[in-house]
Length: 527
Image 1 (cartoon, one colour):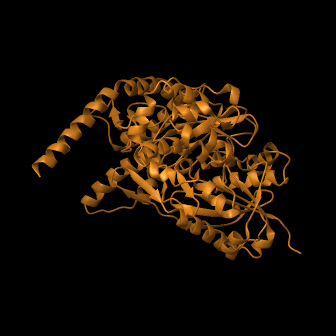
Image 2: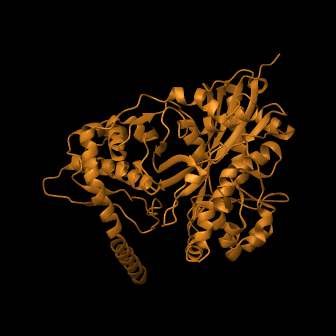
Image 3: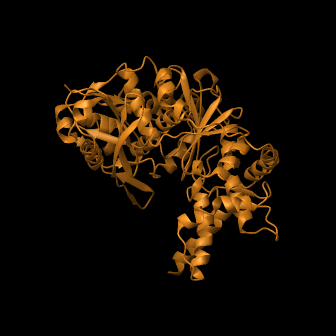
């Protein structure tokens, strides 16, 4: 007789879809991933084939089945999370077209128009989320003006994980997290007429799907999905929350020994989250960030995101790589990363301000400025390459502090995931920047784990999410690494300079953007 002793978490990212198997106590026992693809085009378009995304998801599950003996008969439940925002339109016969991804920037003029509306503050007060081109609401508002036929042909507007859930279960639904930060209110986790009207989409409300909480309800895997995935028809399927909070849940944003904890994923981009009671949310005057529900009653995450985090380190290391290559001594990125902690140790802390806005898209947290750019302040003739490397690393810490300060008091403890977690020196900088101890989770696939945790609670394997966290998350948190007092003092002095320069630079960024545009136009005219 088969034993139901495995939970599967599916994490559908922008470029990779992963299917990860866990035992009922949260130990990872297998994983399989399939590359996904998206297309970019002029005008800021970034799209993904909906049909291919489903085929890739099914292939990942089949691959997992080939790696684990008897998987189909052992799966107690599965859950799906995925890339947030974006617009995945479904009509009577399937996808209306390719999905607009969170990377799609075509809605920029519509965002500017909506942000200038008197109704926007009320929308922000309801959703807790600043307007940006990533969001389904902004994209649908843009479509409504510039491509209304797309919405006319649609019956429902989904997100990536919702589309996969539809293919797995036949149910058109979304979850409380994405529903409330785009069209709803984080306090009651339902759609909100004020938010929908502020986007100019009241007449499109019928496109919004039912809201289903996957920690409380499941739907059975359909026969067709079973044939495509290799799993057993009728297996309970849970609709996870958006990937940002699933990753944070799996990495420790809530629970454990500290009451006021935060979780940062410091990879190519930076995502900074803190779990608070819905009534304790502090919304900033700038109207930026997200408020995203957790699958825990009354608890939400406040979120600020940096467009670029370790991409800044890639840039400064790339300078060294380029020079060495020109001198006939080519090195790999891995070679240079191995020297990172050494270079950080050769430079004095807190000597140079670096703003880590290296992305061509500018910055979005805790302020939104598409023209923001990276730069050094305070260079002197005695500074050498290690000083620049250290300034860049410290810039990541200052930007993280800037984000958390926009959400209220700095956290008492930071749980860290992403590439930055691997460097002891970089962890020390981030810890001192926040004046908080750092703990690193040993969890490899935190997003898939967060989704699987929802399935575990939904089928009654745990009485509530707190009990699941106690077994799946807390034991995997490493020992707390206390911040260095001398570094804390240095960064307490550096942050005011970082902040003052950040607030003074927008006119400079505006002038640079205008100069670049004028130069580009001159080049075109000459041609």
